[in-house]
Figure (cartoon, each protein chain N blue to C red):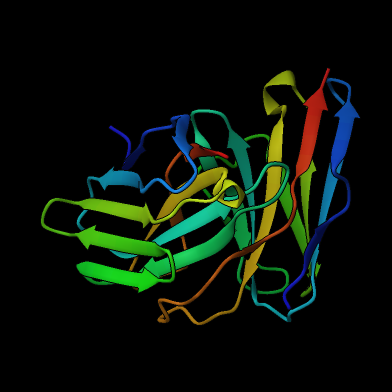
Length: 116
Length: 112
């Protein structure tokens, strides 16, 4: 059974703070993703990684960076948190079967981040 | 124009009703079509996928794709209170990296 865990369920930070969101998966998946989910906007891809130390920008990378030093762990970093980064952050992972339609993304439970 | 449009609801139905959830899309490059279900305070989980026009059935759930109209649907028969969740359509292009474009989700409530 695939498990994706995220370090915190709820997080409250102040404007300007550096924020780290951690994600760990236990299925040896190559691909990992960070999304944010906002009402009316749905899930938007921030960054993804298809291998250790590799990263690609998603649709909304501004204000974020990522780190993937180990295959199982993918971190999202907010260098200087702002109020418009208040959101639900979801991590996902999938195997590298790019041609398979059954290629499923497995999601963690999410981190609700509030920036005051 | 958004690539994928989905009515956010909320949709409220009595237990036992047939539910129809829909998405429209604008880009014919989308080849794989998925439905994710997201319970409150949980991450989305894959419910069904299909990659061709037509119907695919799995128990009480039927996914329907009409590529000519760029329209996808999820039908739930004999809806149960446990089906209360947000349903997201998700579309993916063939080839390339695994970018998935999600709809905004439709919130469904099944009333006992």
